[in-house]
Each structure stands twice: as structure tokens, then as C-alpha cells.
Amino acid sequence: MVVMAERLMAEPNRLHALADFGARLGAAKSTISEDLGLLRAVVERFGLGRIETVPGAAGGVRYRPVRTSAQIRALVERLCARLREPGRVLPGGFLHTTDLIFTPSLAEEIGEVFATLFEDVQPDAVLTMEVKGIPLALMTARAFDVPLVTARRGGRVTEGPAVSVNYVSGSSRMVQSMTLPLRAVPRGARVLFIDDVLRGGGTARGVYDLMREFAAEVVGVGVLVETEHPADKMLDRYLALVTYHGGGAAGEGLVSPSRWLVDAGGGGGLGGAVHRR
Image (cartoon, rainbow, N blue to C red; front, side):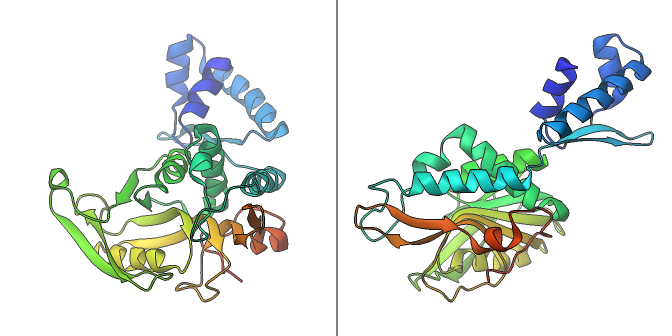
């Protein structure tokens, strides 16, 4: 059971054939099925996720790193507590989040929360912008077992032909560009956009324009932090975990759990795109 649990949890959402477990462990399929039943019960009892069996010749078993409502709320409250530490607000009013985003264990937790909240959309790829969104998007892609795709501010000759679009930043109102290699996203793909901060929503809006060039669909937008200002965002539907209201007298971030978490109680199954209000 330990060997099966390690393999399933090391590769979330990946389908494993029962015959492969049997061959590796030298056990009959019936024994493997019984052990998986016990493992499933333990995982569900302790809120460790969900183990699913897929019937049929091409079926098998897979682990989904689903977080409970209580676990999501606890993580967001823990993030808020860290962001309220003195000295978090940088000159210009920017909130320092890099140390949290680049902590692997915390990034993994956040990625699994996004995978839970966007579970219904089942993306084919997770997209982010360089640089700070990469750890969160990578862990989200791992939880879904899909590729990570990174859009850049400028192209790279080593990535071959690319598509570029211009967009207007929602906060500075400056024209910027994002570039993605032609081979990065297949036509018709379902793409989930994950980023660290959403201010005016210009970058996310630009992602929609970029994906139209690939005939791909943006099925959701998830961000770690949204800023309270500007109040008028350039997109209506997205999901943020934390709202940043500004800086306090001691340089701490004035933050709170996003309103959807308060209103909905932090439950999952939100269908991929959540209205900001």
C-alpha cells in the first residue's frame, strides 16, 4: 500500500493500470483492488485527496489532490497572516510575495487549491507569464498532470516561430507585448491561466487575445492576489485567493481572503471562472 500510495501521489491525475501495480509488487489483481479500497478510505478519511478507479480496458486508478473547504480556508488565512508581516509593502505600494511563491511546499499547496477550484474545467495546459507566476502555475499543472506553458515579454530564438500580441496594462495603461511559441499550445486546447497578482487585469485580458491566435479557449483565470484598486478590472471572471487593500503604517500588507471565499465558504467545484463580485 505504501508503494502504491507513493506512486499515485507522486503523479497526480495520471492513470495507472492495476496490472502494472500487480507486476511490480508480485500480487494478484484482486489483492491490488482490495488494497486500493483500503487506501481510498484512508485518503478520504484524513482529507488527503481522492483516489478514483476508472473502469474498462483502458482504465486504471488515479489520485486527485483535492483540498477540502476547511483546508482551502486555512491556507488562505495562513497566507494572509504572512502577508500582514511588517515590511511587506515595497516602495510604490507593491506587495512582496516572492518568498512565499518560491517556497516549494507552499507553492505546491496553492497549486493543489487551484486544481481543486478549477477541477470541473479539466484544462489541457496551464499558462502563465514569466516570471513570478511560474512556481504557482507549475504546481497547478503538476496537480492536473498537464503541460506548463510560459508566455514571455519577448521571443527566444531557441523556441522557433512564435506569435506575439500587444495588450494594454490595466494598471499603468501602457502598451506591452506577450509572445508564445507556435508549438506551445495545440489548436482547440483548453487553457487555464494562473498568475501571481492581478491589478487592472490587462495581462489576463491579453491572454484571451493571445489564445484566440491559437484557436484555444481560456477556461479559467486564477491568481494568488488581486488588488482592491483599480476597482474596475478589464475582465469580469477570475478567481483570486487574497485581496490586497494597500499598506499599513508599519509597512504590512492590508489583506483579506477574497470575497468569494467568504461568501462561498471556500468550497470547490466553481466551474473554472468566478465573477469578481
